[in-house]
View 1: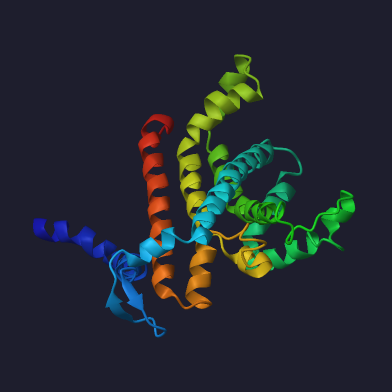
View 2: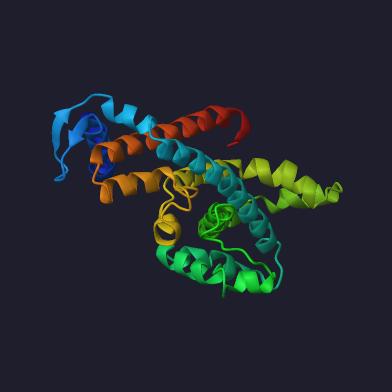
Length: 285
């Protein structure tokens, strides 16, 4: 009987583990394995080259630039998305009459696919007929000007990530004890004091989770780049994922594509690992 009880939990998680291995661990190991080989056009390894693909990768200025572009994108999108989601969650949770309307509007990006969002912003940011240029009296070629192309991708990234971030933070903000907030009000605490000393510590696990999710999303950014800029102009919007896509599906250099995927994984893993080390001091459960 005791032995059966010990086995039962493992049997319950077996289906989840099966799909985790099938769709996460197996592809990851296969990618690492193939990055060490010369790959033919049929995506089959033909010759072991060791770290040769990685040497070629880091001698390619386009790839090095894609790392910089990815970091620039992430450094803007991640904090802005979380801060805006936090602010909108606080507004929605304030109990105002139009809160349900705000909730619907802020969550709408979740219902829109990346490709549809890209087409919408292609129209909004059109250099000649776009609504943004018309309303703000601008003359910016958003997708063809090297100075603004990445900012256009950043705007799309923030808009796409805002819905999920908002929903999680709204749920977290609403879970904060009303008694605690009322006590703070009775003590004379203003909204800023409540946000700093009550809301933020109480929802810090959710903030940490969203940070990790947004790191992954930033490293995976490629959809709007593929649809709108193709990495240009002058590789100013070429991210690691777009570089991997281009080498794999246009040049058919699968070895470099696999190597770029491994480097992207290492970067993401390192950022998340550092975040978990910081979590022990900054996150309150």
